Image (tube, rainbow, N blue to C red):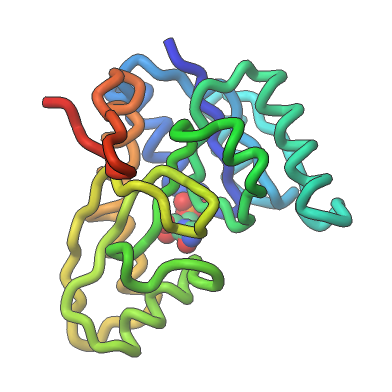
Length: 208
Ligand code: GAR
């Protein structure tokens, strides 16, 4: 069984989807060992506690540097014997050393079809604002491995979602969460925990 650490910063609806999947036996045998929030007041912490999952805070603002923050994260990850890290609405960028230590074992969900509307500065509602500004008719979500390039690692799963006339960033965000993120994130974590993802030439391949 693989120990999953879920890193969060906000509402934690993607964490909720992972908790539901675990309850229903859809997490490929992985278990959510702990939830770590970069923000003390995040509702995701309440979701973790309600589900009986250890909830920890590594307050990004309390650290002078990214290195000090990563060091605190690393200590928590070790404490919970983490095998795989899932970034579920985690709004900080992990340093190269931490990424290197968990190479091909960190998974992120991003609310667009990468390589559109991603990279530094594209997070949360900003992603959907950019999609609406561009006039695309389809957006969606991507689950990918994390490497040193923000939103640049190998893509595991993607799902397209329609952009509708009159959409606001909020309405598009909601549709993408419901139709894409909450489905493909648990699915990708399950595939990983079942050993069904291999990396070849920098690309993620699902073993059927
Ligand atoms: C989600 O839409 C997630 O994809 C996005 O933030 C939201 C968090 O919601 N993540 C990013 O933008 C990361 N670049 P949640 O806290 O309810 O899961």
